[in-house]
Image (cartoon, rainbow, N blue to C red; front, side, top):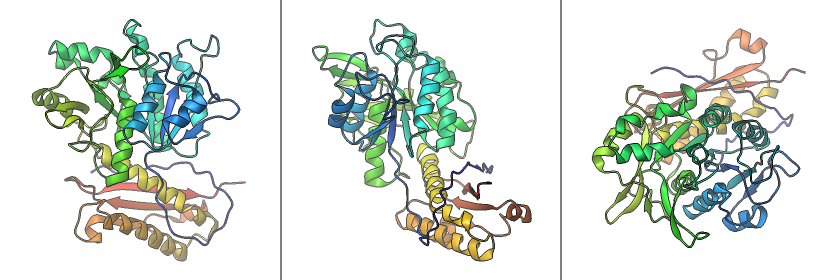
Length: 405
């Protein structure tokens, strides 16, 4: 199994604390980027806004609007179990507020706004329009946007939820499943581990259009199911299967049968299925690196999300160490603190293995910290865990470093 270490930059607050307990960070704070009816601009005064319900969204950003697909996505998020959302309102600066957003606005202003957010775990960027009369390019989020934000999600230890392209549905209707490929997004390498696509889109009764059946992007509802699953089962449980039902929809844009999902799933495409007596459910849990041919450590969404959760929690929970002498006494404190955190996850059933030794390990000693690291005031922590799938250990590396004055 390849070792894919990360060495994230760390902003250090000079607060010395005796607290050595590592607290797990939230796992389902979902950021939404797009146009809203009103509300503070993501890059302006007031910046991004954290909301806890769709009613709160309506109070700040306005009601549902046909010109704001993000409003529908946020509604679906809370309807399906979401509890905390970050809203990034964007407008095209060179035109009226209802003008379609350019790729550069999404990327430049979207990232600038998200840089102000302390923590988010999931990212949704609904297409700028779901009007069937609009050009296909308006009904798809630009691949340039997806590519840039997937790279950004690696930096922020977040997962990007992709909506399937409009043309995939027509290809499926023609039986041309060879035309449906996750490579269409152009997201390669590590960013693909932080992204997942779901197909097909949803059909909902649009209350603003006489409850007519309308095709909607699925990302908000999917993020809601993620949040619901995290809350009930843990971030290590796949948000898929019989208990991963999607609420508030009429049907799927196209009904896939088992044989068809059997073609798409091994490619890294997560299918939505309508099952008799069960309803509409998520029927796949792979990242964009989930194609069988890749044999990637982060093939599966829950494995990647668990790793991101562990990394973020340990990174935040060991910042105190950069102000301590970099010696064996410190390393022992770190090992004990991280091991306690991992043991708690083990007790909750997050890992494979009957014993802790089979489930995880923690290293912070002269095998991870060299004399040069000590000279440069770097502390390297290596954590391995056995995820809930047939696999060897997944390795994580955390580095803490005192900022140079």
